[in-house]
Image (cartoon, rainbow, N blue to C red; front, side, top):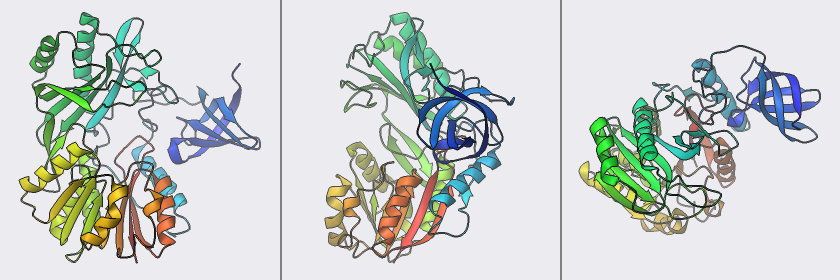
Length: 437
């Protein structure tokens, strides 16, 4: 039987979006509970001093904005005033960096707070014998459906509805994680604001799916905005999303997007910031710390966005990226924008960065690593000996702060830290740290 604690008053929100309250002598962390609310809490984990849980009952009435908000894992703070969300994110960043900074961290607001995401991926499943798509619920792999998600373009949901009609009509087999049977796993989207076009990618277990031509006809006749439809083949068991094989069944696998006055060709698999307007603000902020003497490595460069946007401000840019499709895009993007002082290499960043710093006389690093942060093995005095400036972009303040501590331990100083709200209504924070010797 689940344990429930009652009448927990939420005082503040903390990292990962939890509301924080107290019950007797224990601190309580509750998902989807906002400051000022009083809630009853289902206990999921309990220690001597901490309780983690979810809401069993709200004592206050509020407008959830979306009917799926309570159970969906897609957003955390949707009912909250946006100005309050910015204050919370500033507070969270400031708490992480309170030993290094003595003023609150500024977090730049997003111009768009709804339908701002240019990418999403929906898992597919079945409910009551019917195919469904949606977001996973918090702490589960249960799919929570919705009519229209507030975070991404409405066309994503309309295309999904038509795709579900196809699955239902053709009795398409949905992949089952538990027994590793079935064909259809995910449907994903990329949107180009510049072209007003959509890429649709469908993750499947094998190259052949039933009635492919009919699917293409259904989608493209109803949605002329579709530029390409790709089957991404993932034959592996488990919950990894994308596979290494693909089959183009309509149009193109790439789109063009404009960023900081440059045009970028972006593959459906390549990394590209999900909030274009905020990404431009972030790039302009980073560029303000660069000068014509800088020779840069743009590590984890994706399709080359940061490095290429910085190219007119520096002497030389070298982009390092493991994803070969993204590197191909980056090379094409340099040529397309007539940028001659940038090169890109497909490689594992951790294996190449030390030799490349020496070979190319690099003095500045731009890092935009995955959520796990940097490989701590190359945060060393020998590797960083010739580096005098680091621009560290992160979507995870916890690992960024860990790495900043290591960098300050070998001679760097944190000159500036600014947050950018790329993800309104979620707890996620993008932050840019500037470190110099």
